[in-house]
Amino acid sequence: LGSSYAGVCYARTSSYDKEGLAIIYRKDKFELVSEGRYWLNMTDPDKELILTGGGYTANFYRIAVYTILREKTTGQEFYFTTAHLDNNDAGNGQVKTWQAQILINHTNARSGYDNGANRFLIVTGDMNSNPEREAMQRFTSSTQNYKDTWTVAENRYRPASNIPRSTM
Image 1: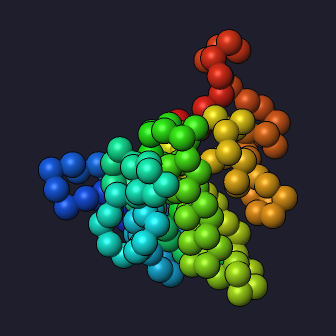
Image 2 (image 1 turned 180 degrees about the horizontal axis):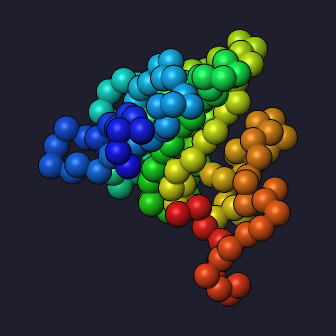
Image 3 (image 1 turned 90 degrees about the vertical axis):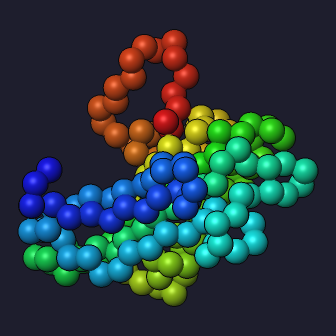
């Protein structure tokens, strides 16, 4: 993208698996306030652990990457995060549901939302889920009030109407 852009990128693990997540932004429009990565596991977000619980285990180490960006002309800040939830559907998607809730909890806490910060929240990623599944419904429940952009978008595109909508 050239020198007009900057970004943050974190690898999923320190092992051979070099999958990672990145957030790229325009340097002339936004200032990076903070950034980071945390692990989507049940015990310690600072440790490289695979989520396990209730007899279910994630297939891979999973992370979320976040930034707080400040729009240079207005000073408005927003919290942007991206994640890649597990593809394990054991227990009717229980692993994804837990990871979704971990993502929500950390987004609310790290963004400052829980403390009344006036920031927009943007959550993106491959949630490996369909909107009807509990993992995705956690985001749009009345207790969270996140908006699904597909639902509120005026124009939508899907390769074919007979293919279920997914968050991939």
